[in-house]
Amino acid sequence: MRVAIAEDLYLLREGLVHLLRAHGLDVVAAVETGPELLKALTGDPPDVAIVDVRLPPTFTDEGLQAALEARRRVPGLPVLVLSQHVEQLYARELLADGSGSVGYLLKDRVFDAAQFVDALRRVAGGGTAMDPEVIAKLLASNARSAPLGRLTPREREVLALMAEGRSNAAIAQRLFLSESAVGKHTASIFAKFDLAPSDDDNRRVLAVLAYLNAQP
Image (cartoon, rainbow, N blue to C red; front, side, top):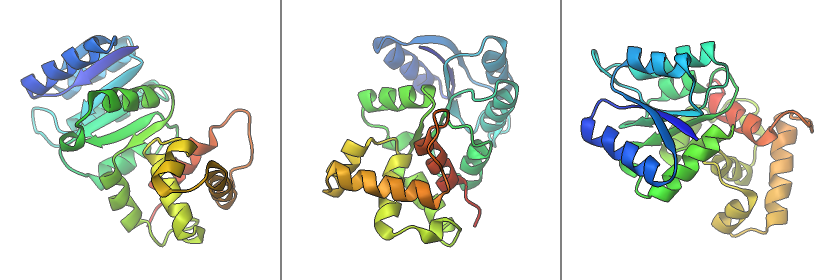
């Protein structure tokens, strides 16, 4: 898997390079500015990009804007954001096109290399990997949105764990439910989001995107 990294802090950038290579991934670019990132993502698109929101020279949203522009030029380009803070607006912008292949993790909550690489692989494969704190902030602002308002408290718990990228088996273990019970909850969620069975669409990703991208 080919990975591009955009991070202005030298030690963190080099640490990511070594970590990913140790797990057998090919780091094809490691840059520190928005323009460098855009060039790396569109010249020869990687399989996934790891992006810091705030990059030089202004340290506002150069990384995010470069990633968004890259996804406009290369639809569906997988992007995993690593940020110091929960930026609800930035998370919404990233999710707005509804195409999946997105993640948003907080730097100080990434403690396990294997879990981080697993999240990166999920994003590269078209899924989502959202930090629980990001989900909580978005959920709080979307609490009254339709169709979120039609979900039961248990369905909201299941959907939040789906947004983290967890499987039905992992959700069942986390909530002390049977897998069949989780399956019934997910079926109900799909129905309430009007997501009909399809051979082409990943309903889990579509449900998560509808959940995270709902307007307050």
